[in-house]
Length: 207
Image (tube, rainbow, N blue to C red; front, side, top):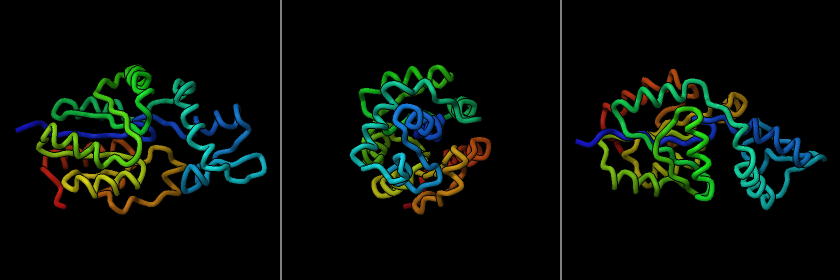
């Protein structure tokens, strides 16, 4: 039987990102980022307090990953949890950034002693998760992500995968409801670790 598999996001699961993005857009672009807003398009405001157009949001995110990844810091307990899980499970980091940032993400994670396979992705994560399941055929799999849209995508494409909704940024977590398609919502790694271990030992989730 193949080893179980943990598929985890990076930003706001392993590394803090949005608070550093907020600092950067304020410093470099005179924009504010409302951490309690429901999404990036509503959160990013100009000097008059008006949401910026969607056409500006994604280039700004790319700009952050091009030059500012050094700002990001580890989520408490994340590295320790992955180290503990790696004894019995394979781990893949599925991060929603372009392939052009993959080498930088690998280097960034290595600075925090996180050394696992890193896959980049644009759009929903359901299909790449299914591809991993079909290729690796794990005895069980857990998916961890901070965005509800990705839990919805994974539920649609790979319902046998356990889904954990985690938001490591407290200001975001406090204003974001649990993802409806996730099996659980846990925002701290010390609480998430036993839940993940139990699901990996339990076998596939029921569709």
